[in-house]
Image (cartoon, rainbow, N blue to C red; front, side, top):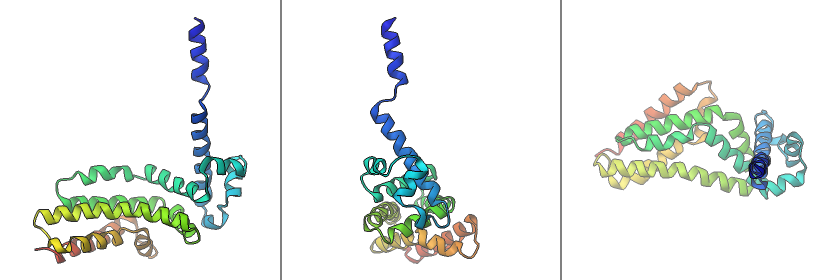
Length: 210
């Protein structure tokens, strides 16, 4: 009986690691809340994040080690909750053209859902080299997706193998947040942007067809 009581107490008491993860989650949520403001890039200082999360500035540093690491965590959390988990399913589609269309749709939905947060994150990156480097590395993952898909098009004899890299770079540019934001400025909704980018992507694929 005593063992059961001890076990119960241990179960109810969070481990140090779990407590640290809970604090990190609170800080990410606080930073995200600030970044949802139109002026989030100006308001989202570490002091402001600490105040919203009701912790000390030192706790922020102890949790993430740097300002850029906190904002990287915000991006990753938004990506996890913003539908990027669907990428694996899109990449498994047997037709690479269908996979490209699916990837375009996934990223337009992501950019749309997180438009303000991402705009402010990229704005912060313009003055923070470490954050800019981290965001660029995450974007390169998208380029890799298109490299894989254009290689599949090439392997299937559907495009000129020498053009595979150029096509991947074009698709990468078409699905960037910056390109999305330019299209959205004119009031286009997500479906309209998907259609426009999808049409341009199809034209690009056709241009390099054998």
